[in-house]
Length: 306
Image 1 (cartoon, one colour):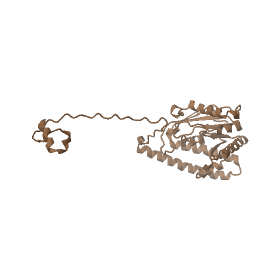
Image 2 (cartoon, one colour; image 1 turned 180 degrees about the vertical axis):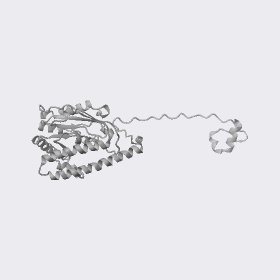
Image 3 (cartoon, helix red, strand yellow; image 1 turned 45 degrees about the horizontal axis):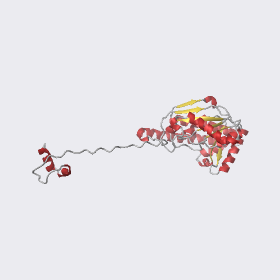
Image 4 (cartoon, helix red, strand yellow; image 1 turned 180 degrees about the horizontal axis):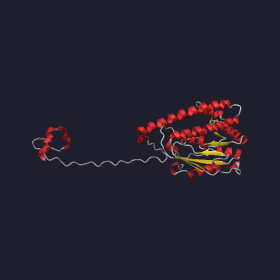
């Protein structure tokens, strides 16, 4: 073994630093034992509990391709149906209520088509609470939520959106033609006035209303604090509130992503909440009470962090 090591040393001077030999190459000493340095322990930091874990890379290129095809097909389908119903709306300009009804028909057809294209398994519960005049509210964490409420809210329902929606090509113009309500979220005074007008409109025309009380989409699926607008609407209209709890949509198509997954989605209508005895002195309490109902009915990954 000594001669082998010595010969190897003579053939390759690069191993000089690994052997402790004398300067005399004819007297090659046995190399010392190697000391293996202990490998440093690698500590993986856990993800923050509210951080969304995006596993796009694990889905593979084929799934990504299918996802892109589905999204493009949804976009084209929506443009076609929107154009068709925009023409219908123009013909119905003298009949505002009929435009509202046709707007709902558009939502039922388009929303159902888009969900069929996306292909997510959907379970719907509590439909016995879905066919009454009410203020329907829903948690919001995905574009899919919009498709679902378009499809599942009853005929005679109007929505509330930011005023800038009018600039969305075709869809924004159809939204206005269908007599849905727009508010200026940058101006609290104007927003409150818009809410009052909305309440008067739904009472006068025997309409229902659909609103996302969080005011924006959650980035990670966890429930955000509720704005108070839906409570003000309830106080002025005295309509009951019907909560719609959506689970799984944030996994199926998250905010800001172009990747859609075949994640199962659950839609659950909860029993209506009477507002007849509500008073303006307890707005914060009512807001918290309804928020707590959502916290109770959402799965753990969608509950808000304390």
